[in-house]
Structure formats: C-alpha cells, structure tokens
Length: 632
Image 1: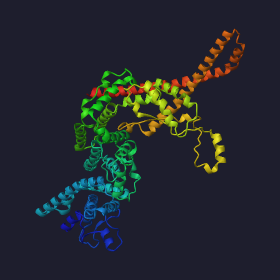
Image 2: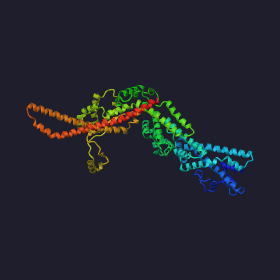
Image 3: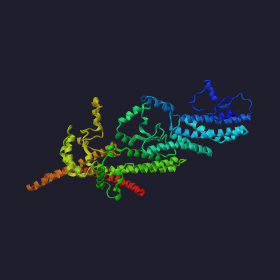
Image 4: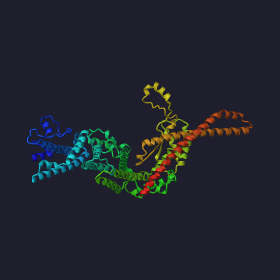
C-alpha cells in the first residue's frame, strides 16, 4: 500500500489507485493525451477496496490529488519543452525541410514563452519529487504513521498545485502564449499566499527571461528574434504572408527586395506594436520607445553601402557647407550647435561601447529576481536616448539635415527669389505660348540653366540635386464640362483623366524633383516630397500671376508716358487719353485688388507659416542640444 501511494503521488497509478481517464481510454471512451485537460481530478481509489476506514479513504483521496496535479503539470512541461518537432526534420532532405518544419510547427504550435514557463514548472516539480523521496526514506527508516507523515511532508503543495493546475488549464484551453501568458501570470501573482506568490513570481521570471532576450536582440542588434509571433514588436507583413509558403519561397521574396527598399520599408511601415502581445504592465509609451529604439539601431547597424564607404574628406566638406548655410537656422542657436563629433567621422555609426552599455543595462534587468516597472522604464528610456542621440548625429550632423531643409526651403518654397524671378523673366516669352508636347521640358531647361548661371553660387552644392520636370501639361476643363464630355464620350471614359482640381495653363504642370541619399530617404519620402511639390506648383503659379500683373501695369504706364510725351510735343491737351484712362480705371482697380491679394497670400505662405514652424523647430532643436550638453 505504501509504495502504491508513493507511486500515485508521482502520477503512476496501479491496482489500488486507478485513473478514471485511463480506464475510459482502455474502453475506447476517453480522449487522447493531447485533448483539453480535465477540470476535475481523475485519480481515485479502486471501488473494491474494503480494508480502509472512511477517514483513511478520505485522507488518501485528498493525497492522490497531488499525484494527479503532478502528472498533468509534468505532461504540460514535457509537451511545452518538446523539441522533437525540430529534431525530426534534421535528417530530411534540405528541399523538404522547410515544408516539414512548417507542417510540424502548425501542428504543435511551439512557444518559447511556454517552454520557459515549463522550465519553471519543472523546478517546482523537482522540489516535489525530492519531498516524496524524503518521505519514502523516512518511512522506510522509522516506524511512523504513514498517512500522517505523508500529509505533513507534502502539506505546502496543497497550496501550490491546484492554482498552478488552473494556470496551465487556462493556458491550454485559451491557447495563451507570448505577452498574454505574462499577463496571466502577473495577475495571479497578486494573491495573499506568500508561498504561491513566490512560486508564480518565479514562473513570471522565466517568462521575462525570454522577453529580455528578445529585447536585447531588438535593441542591441536591431534583430527581431520572434520565430513564433509572441513578441509585442511584429513585422508589418507577417499577417500578409501565406503561412503555407515554404522557407525557400519567403527567402526568394526577400532576396528580390533590395537593401535600400528594405531599409525604407523597415523604418516607415516595416514594424508595429502588437497590442495583443503587449503586457498590460508595459505602457503604450514604453512599447513605442522600444519600437523606435530598435528601428533606430537597425538604421545605424545597416548603413547604405554608398554612405558606408564615403571618404572623410567628403564628410568634412559637407560639414563646412552646413556651417555656411546656417542662415536657415539664423543666429539664435549657440555656437556649440555646429560642433562636430569627430569620433563619428571615422568610427562606427553605433560604437561597440554604446552597444555594450545597452546590453549591460538589459542584463541587469534580466538578472533581477522581480520585475520592477520603474527600473524597466528607466532602462528603456535610456536605450531610446542613446539610439536617438546617434541617429541625430547621423541625420543632423553627418547627413546635414539643416542643409537639406534649407535647400527645400530655397527651391520648393521659392526662398531664392532672385533665381525664380530670373527664371520667370527668361522663360516669359516661352510661357506665353502653349508648351510643345515633345520638347516642353527641354525648352524650359535653357532659361532654367541660364537663371542658375546668373544667380546660383558655386558653393551651393544642393542645386545639383534639383531638377526641372514637365510630367504633364495641357489645358484642362472644369468638373461641369468634364461631366458633359464624359457623357458624350463614354468609350473614352476609362482613358480620360478629368478632375476638378486641375490646372488651366499648360505650364502649371512645372515640377521640381529633389534627389536625396541615405539616410535622408528615411525622412524625405516620396509622400513628403510630393507635398513640397504641390506647394511649389501653387507658389510658382502665384509668382507668375504676380509678375504678369506687374508687367501689365508697367506696360500701361510705359504706353501712357509715351502718349503724354507725344501730346506735349504736338501741343494737344490729350483729352482722348484722359477719357481712355477714366474708362479703364475700374479694371486697374481690380488689378490692384488682385495684386494685393496675391502679395498677402504669398507673404502668408512663404513667411508667416514658415516662421511659425521655424520657431517651433528651433525650440525643439535647442532643447535637444541642451539635453545632450547636460549629459556630456
């Protein structure tokens, strides 16, 4: 009886203590071992035992529940730690390995978080087995009451095993994994039983080890180490991939994507926060900080080859050019803003010492026995600050962000008024005629280059990035006319491009293109440049309108002076000219109002709004520099 009881405490039934589930299985009525767990204990005494007193039967039935919980916890641990789904494909032919791995993964649904929790459960079960072994040794060495000794030796496990079994029951039933698993353990840690709280905190510690490893891979190396989609940082395209695709197909798809396109996609839309896997005790702000830090590290560790192998001489020239164009930033910034981090000119974008510092901070969190929210927040904020600082050095200092912003302001916002005034003067005779379909763009290049020769200095290295384009031109019609044409030309409806927001002059399609290199492409995207282009096209239209209004007034005044001189020469009173002036006075009043409107609109767009933005930009820029200086 003693050995039967001890074996039952370790989950092994026999003739005296039977498993109702196993009996059903032998009769073909039970579910298999992979079915959902039973809500109730299935261990019980054999019904034909008659030599036990009712009190002894009740006590044994209470004890064998521990054996049932032990067996179920052990099954969960073995199932979660099972790596046969990996080993089983090591001998398969390489061409079939990926498909086999995908098939096994779908069937077993592996989870690194469950495997970590299973390791923690294994530690608890090891303590339990040691307790059973001690009880056996004590009973064999001494003549003590069996049931009392067993109950006294396993008393603390009556508090631990039932809640642990409820945890794995919830995990199996709801298929909980990843951050959701951490949430379940964290909520159950808030209990009033010290032993149970310590046990659950240990399981949570094992789960946090996986999270810290993923954080280290992401925030130190910029690598998303999440094979089973359990981390709260996910790739954007993960949901779009066909899970049935083989590894070779996915690799070919990634290989077709260039490094440049991958970098742009990763920064803008490559990764996102999975709210389902974000633990409740980690705020959304912290999640976004982790996301930003990892993306920044990816940028710093994977520079463009053209940028990576550029010479230091070119970099120094860029720095001198950046200092020359400080007019964009004016003189409000202190002199320390133009200081250059000389260590970055010849070193890595992310020095190894900084990477080691980040890794050390995460290792300190990992070694802590408990999760401290405040320490976690401070570490994440520190890592974000380090990543942001080096990204700032890359973008603002090395890639000269201020110079690019100044160039965009000069050319897309018409800040270089002398250049565009000269360009419009030179191209005015050309623009009085409709653009030619085949040579419209090349015709404009002559006055464009002539204006550049007259007004653009050689030291303006950003002018070479600007190019003039004529993507489309032609007189378009308003929406009411478009509807009539669409009704009369049904067969051409699919080919027509008739919109209400289109130009009324063929030359209104003049466009500027601005060439940017890495890493500026991360910020000046096609969407951003298209917005600048819309502003440019509107401003150049206003500039042309203003110039034509001024030219019309100058032409009339010139003609009036000629007529006045002629009248004085002939000795006539010029009554005809005075009557003509009186007749066209309302038209000149309209011209004056139009010119007033155009001037004020230009002032608002080119001066008022940029000044407000520039003021906010200076305040943010200054605060960043003060923060960097205080840290130094």
